[in-house]
Image 1 (cartoon, rainbow, N blue to C red):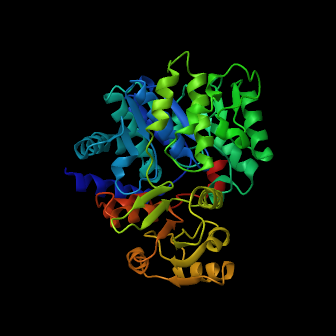
Image 2: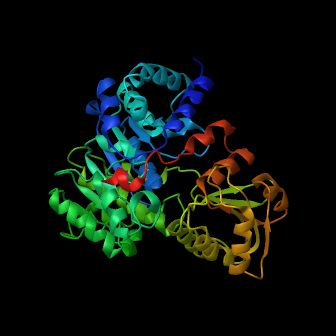
Image 3: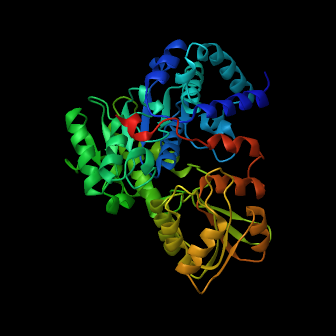
Length: 447
């Protein structure tokens, strides 16, 4: 088998759709020797900010000298981004080896209960991290938490970044229902850190933590820029030193809240994994997470901001960042969104900031129509030129003379932009691995 064949095999797993439930993942992990039992984890769930928080935690513990695994999704360009050790992507040869080693085990599942793409990749990651003898794994959920394939582990700490409306067709149409799915990663006696501040959602997380006797540390979002604020014994925590968040290279107030989460998590784990304040500061100062308010300056002086604001909460954070952290004046907006997102609301939030707007299709089976996006943007900002383009490449050509361009709306679009701008090796054939479709009705899966 060669790498291209391994990727093609993973593509074939998409035929089994995506579904909630832990039975297959437990069974496949057992057939692989239960590698999760050889590892320590920090499990991260939430609507937005999961990836950034994971990147910060990884950077902190790597700065402390640990060998750190990082499991995230979706990938921007290459599948290999999903599985990293000390920020080195899993090699093509390792992907081939892991696929080959799991293939015999997959034959032990009946056709109507075959593991999905994400279930297989989850166990691939566990096998790789165990083989690499990682000291710690930063472990991001895929979708939800309670019945997400990643939830077969018992972590040292659970982190829930925030709760907002997204993936309602899977997780429920209220904040309380979504919070119940995310809070499903809370384990008995395992400490929890959250920045969720919607009362309806926070009440669910608090109730779950009480039932599991899991110590809960809450980060007040309005104080996030000053770091972690526990709900009790405020004088104790060394993570509330403002200087530890000041030199964060990731832009936006929401990233300061994510940093506060990472700081608080490092604090509650000090007895199990000691990290000095200096290493924490070094880790945060060196964090890197592409595609989230990532500013690229081209040789001609043009500035392009890439941000995967793929839902309403993400669009709100992007809007606030544009208003607070970048030069005043109208930007040029390049927008592509998935159809199953609240794209009308996203257009209303972002279009008024732009002088020119180019809507584009996302390279996805679930792409929203560029024409429909353009109509929504014109309604939100009649003064701006709004034009639907056939591709992102066309939009980039049309914006060549503009000073400041914002490309946003989907992480898929951001990945394509990184390729076209020459900031990531081309791997277009692998971006499609992010696609998924339901294998069963979500309501039935949640019962």
